[in-house]
Structure formats: C-alpha cells, structure tokens
Image 1 (cartoon, rainbow, N blue to C red):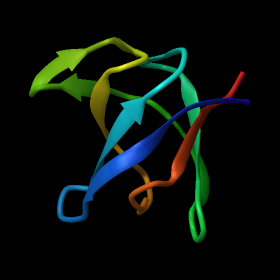
Image 2: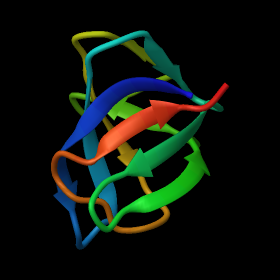
Image 3: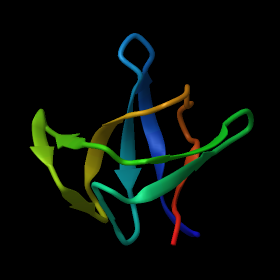
Length: 82
C-alpha cells in the first residue's frame, strides 16, 4: 500500500471526489483505498477526469476527479494498493 494523495473536494450530489496526487501515479484500473476519521473503503478506479477531459493516468502534481463508491471527506488519504 502506497500513499499517493488526498481528497481535495467531494461533490455529494454526484459522488465524485477530486484527488490531489502528490506521489507516484494513478491509472484507470488501479485499486485504491480511502482512509480518514470515518472513511475506510477500497475500490477500483473505473474512470478519471482532469479539467473535464477523460484521462487514463495522472502523476504527482495532478488533480483528478473520480466517481467514488462511498462518501469521502476532504483530507482523507488515498492509497494505491499493490
């Protein structure tokens, strides 16, 4: 398990999280874990968007939006599972 970023924003009405990636890279198909005070779940990344365009991967320094399976909160840590 590798820490790759944190949740910068969560849109409740559409269940989309914006993730600031600060290490490594994230790709469609990667399995991730969201962890926080009241957050603890895993999911596979089905799709990602950067600036309203679909992308297949993102690297450190990028911010991506992904559809999430459960509610997340700002500052929840995101891990890439290996």
